[in-house]
Picture 1: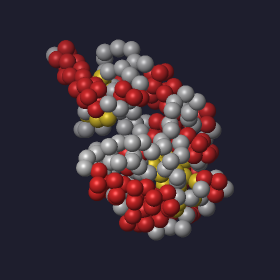
Picture 2: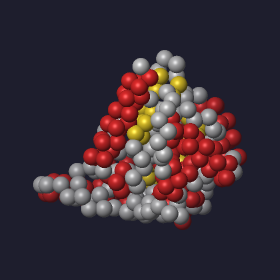
Picture 3: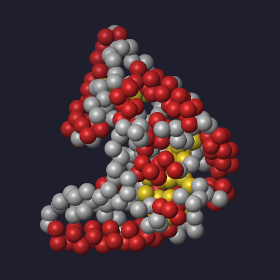
Picture 4: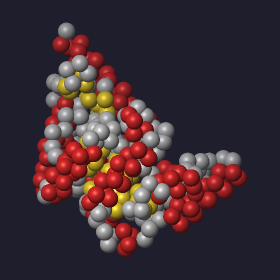
Length: 288
């Protein structure tokens, strides 16, 4: 079983044949509701810092606030960012399966950022880096180090940090492309007509469109594929995305879409993925 673009559903994948196994159960799936939840005009993508209390607070509070202050100090004002064309990279929370094992060699996000910095340099773009919301909540232990920020900034002169306190909608609307290892921001980008660059085993299995540019080791191929993606019109990207999601909703196993907040709960995520596995096993039993 492999992840799909829908948190509530999984693909059954044949590794030998390199194909997605058909789901013959024609249960309805709330696809339009899922797509609407990812569109900028309907979803709440306010990623400003939230409070998440962990105890004891003494050491946690000190390091957390220290990281907040340094990250804010290291960010570039958006009016300066918007003066240039740019690609935005959304950092992954780690450790997490989206980078280990799904990221492959790009479990180190620095390696992906190096490739993107080189791409941006060749196109005279900026590379904007945005931290994961889970690492910028006050009073929790998920902070990163100052060294982590400095190491990213030192990748290239064209690499800048976005202000983590601001909503991600505005910067997504302005960017030329979204970049991620395998993150769910792929959905937000494609549903809103923005091309995406990926580096790992992303959940859009069976994708045949041109608006996802998958880096597979060849920099020349990355540049040529990305230039093609940049020529796509917004409506073209949205159309091929909806066509793929329609295909994926019928191929995948599991529960219906329950909304962003409910889908984010671990218990419901566990339940739906267990259901997906059970549905697939039942389909095999029924065939036999």
